[in-house]
Image (cartoon, rainbow, N blue to C red; front, side, top):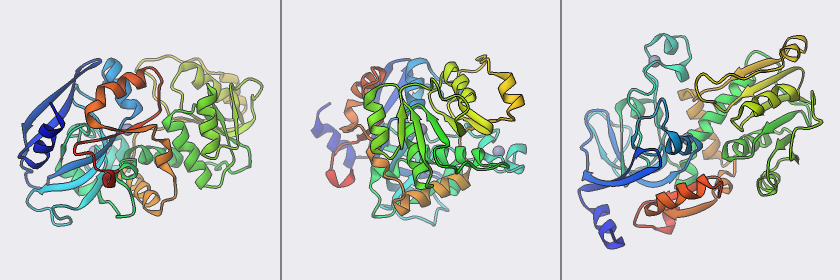
Length: 356
Ligand SMILES: [Zn+2]
Ligand SMILES: [Zn+2]
């Protein structure tokens, strides 16, 4: 399909959407633009971002994300409104996240909306597309106006930043927050590890990043990391807080190893279900470590992330490896497979610089 065809689609009543139909199998489909039903919103996508979760799904599928419309981090302009949506107008630039809690299940009632039993019932998947239909519950809870000063690419960071905000709320929950200089370690310098670096620096903390590879280490330093180390060797017990972002069983063990007495460990990266990890039980018990997992985000976390983006508090755009036309989605995932680049921004046709 040529550029002319794509431009025609942009102005037509049809949409174009990338489907992940099986591991490493991307197909494009063209369909009638959906008419939003009551409470729903149809968005014209202006920017979509790749994400580690997408890469995992691309490689082997995902237990909570079905094959089908692909991608979940995006921003855009409202193309059509369902009945009853009165907070927005057609044409409004917006940002959103791909889920919203139901508000009525047991975890939701207990304030654990990130663990809502119906979180994945209706998701706004299909960010790699000309348009995305947002379900009513997302419109009601997790759709925000994009401020004019915020670029579409920056606005599309709402979802990963909400995850980071949630992780920090877990890390600081009910215990002493680590603020001592030099006391925070982040294991892993992928997009998420580096987003944690930006957040920690905004919070005024001193950060050590364990980064494999000089390219990522130097990016971590450019983004404000005070120190980078190629491995955690010799750092046992040196950090009041450790955030694990590398997603391997050995990095989970390292995180426990690095924590100081009464230290806090945040396992931010998920491992495949049923993964067994052996951790140093003596250290966890006798050093009184607090070890926590972190999953997803609540609407409050999304609002905090929106505020941070709106304030321009974090230079998130520096995490983008390249801005490319959406048509090159398959190339981009090939590159990510080769560890070539951290996070890409994909722009649907027509590729207009002012939308970047
Ligand atoms: Zn994501
Ligand atoms: Zn719920």
